Length: 321
Image (cartoon, rainbow, N blue to C red; front, top):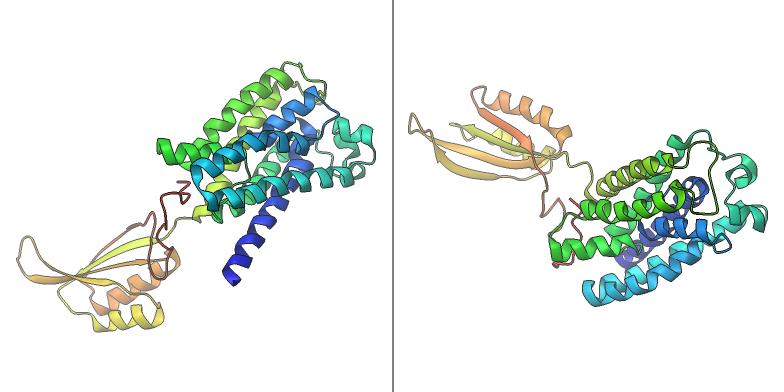
């Protein structure tokens, strides 16, 4: 029960964070960070009377159907909740953030929250902040085996059937949306225009937003990936080192019987995975136990099992990297 409550809380929190990123940093400046909501921003420039979140509802319906059919009922149910919640929060925030309907239709940043968050002269800040916030929100959702709808669904389908990395599939799908944003917003077809800089520059900001979003998304799901794999080869049994690893580090490892290629002497090779913070102290302990030990330290891309991440439970599990 606690695990279920935590999972749904994380999904709803991710939806709220994603909506904040769009409403306060992305939508007002015509930046198109890909996905359904990026496409919705493009459509809102053509039909300003319709809110971005409403377009999100309209585009998500066929994609949600694909999610249930191709990705399974578990992912489909959670995705439906996330995809319906995000545009609802987005629309609600916009109604609160803008003083009247005219400002809402134009998404005028000078009237957003009374103008205190107008970043029209600092679009790179708006781009990076918005993309990072969206990546954080989407990452929280995806970690719970759900998606926020839109390009997430397409990316998961590409991952499952085309064996692409999730974050790379996101960049591919979002790149297509940015192309249409360039046509509609960059070349002035849409009704809303940003006067602070040439509108074609917005496509470059959009590409930067896609990259930042995908990197933050991968980081939130995978973590920093800085665990270390260590091999310790010694002619001694090293009982003190064994006790240090088991008692002080609360880790375990594996002894592997081996022999020297040149001498033919029997040796023991200790294999273990530790966090990067534990490496320096462990090297000192190894030197105390056997100054002549041979030690190899390398990166561990992923570690699964007790004390680390659980193994994937199904082929539908998300692996962004």
